Length: 551
Image (tube, rainbow, N blue to C red):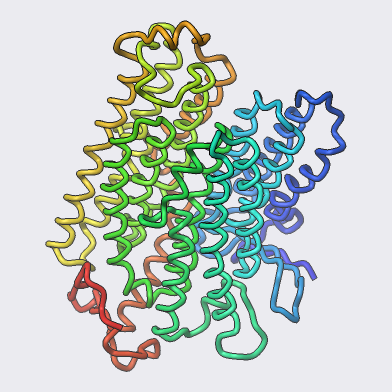
């Protein structure tokens, strides 16, 4: 039996249109039809077909937001539920709330632009666009499904297109990069399966893996800590968290421009979303214990990756480490117990998805002209590529969090939310904010010096004599323009995005704060080991960070 529901909202449009299932299945079915598209081998027909499918998918997600989603409701909306394998407790359950709806929109938006960025692909175009469309549906499924076992299946199936896109269309070391990617991500995702089975079968009876059923269970603190640790490893690889990050620079170093956009714009956000959905929402008592560690890891991400990016001479690897650095702010926001800081983490994921996609697209466009990624071999091309230089400058300024851009707002929210978070001691907050500010200072240094090395200085005769340094073409200007509109729009008026998830974030933070209070009381049902207790905020006490309590 198929059920449609919106938490307390009677909507005849939503009741008759399965928006989320349609957004997942439409691009997948479209991918299955790719082999039947007539094509002469140059990809001219199939690329128009793929672009049409991705644009329709984007319109479906927009329609879902406009006609079936109410931002003021914190609960699950656009719900669709079909009993799939009841004996195993597996249900096709999809839905959206403030944690998932913005990322569903981001996924379909970035994928449609990545399809347009793939216009020059002529090698095995049918297979390329087949994988791109399959990846579109798989990534939306990761954010939309409401069953943990189904989430694991979507997480695993989404890895296959990425592996093939790297292994077939990558650079000289593509096999190494693709193998490393699949070993890291597929290997670590086994922790998701183990945690899902443990949580689903917890308490006996018929297993259920739906998020609502898992959230209603009273997991012991020790059990939560074990599940949290395993999930942190799985999601930390995808985020990525240092030292689980080493697959990302290699993958970015060998990927093509559209794959870059999908990696930076969507895949990294899957890790941050999963931390909020599972670690924070389903395991609140364990999150109270691990939150200081997340903040410390976030600072390590910011400083280590910024310093490493500063030292890179390969353009792709420089931007890749910059992405790792910016994702550190997501960890700090998730680790804070303030609605402002957590909201900043959510906005940082959206902002970085847009900015990261724009920078990596420009990296690919620049490589197509210069045929080199080494900064030492570039220089002096600004006069011949003035529009390209302007696009690079605007996107780099967005990445270094220039006021008026989305990155500035998101990082400011994380800083302000954590700095005013009384769950932590004042010295800890001062130290963390001071160290994170170092990363903020390093970012403009390495980005502006990168622009100087590419576009200014003495023109390299070898570069200009062997390459055709044509300026940006209309298609490239259009792609960057589409990305800059939300970047600047969110920067000037953040409520365009924050209002879509504010109530869900407030409910999530309230749940975590309630868990902190319960585990600090000896009579609380969540207490299993009093040595794991964390002082409650309500009593004016503070978390002693960054040290974690002994198990």
